[in-house]
Image 1 (spheres, rainbow, N blue to C red):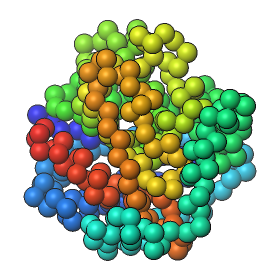
Image 2 (cartoon, rainbow, N blue to C red):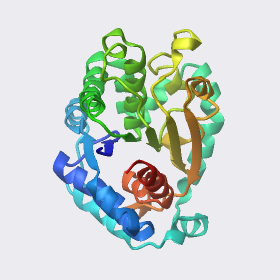
Image 3 (cartoon, rainbow, N blue to C red):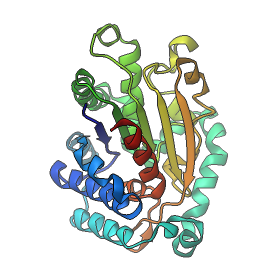
Length: 307
């Protein structure tokens, strides 16, 4: 039996796949070395893959006039190197408050305005300004469809093999995970397939899924309740960082509570992400989520039971 972990990255420009996957694996491995060195061999023996779609993102972002940062990989590595120096306790509130910037009010403001923004039909326009790739994901059938298809291919292969499956998504990647799980649950071309089975664990990091505008654009949002949610998930752990404006509404359990009817257990965790980039706090940073003790603990418990 092979334990399978599938990583799905988030929005924006990314380094090339081999380098970016190494960065993510380095973050996860460093977290285990710090907190659960006893389970590091099990982690290293797992079948870990990454669903990479940054090439599709880059093509679209360049088309709208954006350009990647020249030293992006070096800056990402510097961020991770700094995180690797922290002790477990330094991922808590007191250390975070010492190094956070003045931007902390943005998350609270976004949370307060979430419902009126959606009601006034401004939500999509704000995403277009702050996170245009998320807006494009649900607006363009080709971009969104191509991204989802890449996860479908990897997930289909994993489901055909024996062994538990864990999906780990960050930022836009959490939307991709959710939408694909919904498709596998309800699309006729998938739900009758013999290989189609439940995913054991979904870990969402910095997810915007609780945002009202996002929820209105998810797969299944406009169908009856009995078909509205994925039915092929055993457990969902959502981890959201303080001041992460993308995940400003940090709880998904209340918004997706009807998924419990299919046997899915949903748990929310609020954390502090001490990642910095170029000397400034960056609470949405993926490696900060991956190396965090809460993420490590979640993966470690799953590995203990399933390997």
